[in-house]
Image 1 (cartoon, helix red, strand yellow):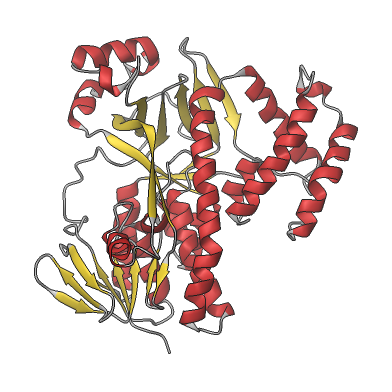
Image 2 (cartoon, helix red, strand yellow):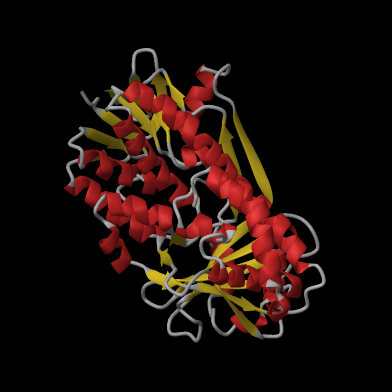
Length: 447
């Protein structure tokens, strides 16, 4: 028999989880600290635009919502690199049919809340969590209300109060670690109409800092500026509008005419932090589980924060089915299965920060990407890039991370003395793939 489920947090993961559970006729009640975001004015400033990739699409498909989400999104097929000189270079992500979906965080959240309510979930807004009595399964909210639960899911984001209650009350079992990136971000806006390619992620890589832009459905772009907290070019050294203007004239001159309100946006919007949250355990007492950012917040440079959270949901349901609807066994299996995956994508997202800010315009890096693309086309059964596996497959993240290390060995060997992708030896490539990579693929059932 299924328990009645309580969810803390009606963000992206919590709302999708409510839909998925209701599709299985499970009673669901959701508590959200915000007022109903569908009725509130979207003030902006905190939303890094999202990309939906394979894992996110799988979750939406399981909920029967993929086509509706597609209608809210714009396809993205590759990166457009903007040099200081204004020169553009394009890097296709994967094969021609492979693409990501750019979507507004608020638009997706509003849509999922609507779908959760339509599916029969009860959602209570303006309910801020105060404390949880895990022994008696009782939640108290700051407004004074109480609620008893049978099964509790914390989907309340990187600053999760459910996780905080667990770490405070069970310090011997629950330890959390937050690793802050030494860079912060600001959201800016690039209105429509504009000359930017709507089907590309635009990146202005500048070494220690960068800017990127993703299209919205109306042709405008949400722009995110990433700067170190301290240093020569940093948030610390921007003290007034003149400093902001100098930064853009020096580093991003081609964007000034495209963003008429960039000075106002920079001043008005908050400076956001970028951190990775890891938790030593995700479940407690066969009645509490963490999902999404509450369990594993990551930096946004692989575009997998939401996608990995949606995968928590689909993985839990798969394990529930495999365990004959035994929730106790499923909770244990969920913790054991998903934590290694979350740690792996967290590591890879941090690595991708350096790739996007420093390497995407580098000649050696570009040659490596061309070699990867060539190997994918020539040996489709033997090779798919790490990026491709993360973004376009459902291969577990921890296996992708291991595969990436083996790929590094192969690519390093192939790139020795290589001046052009036309000089790549297919014979040598096939030999290395079969000797180094194929045993791994066979061992993990990937071929």
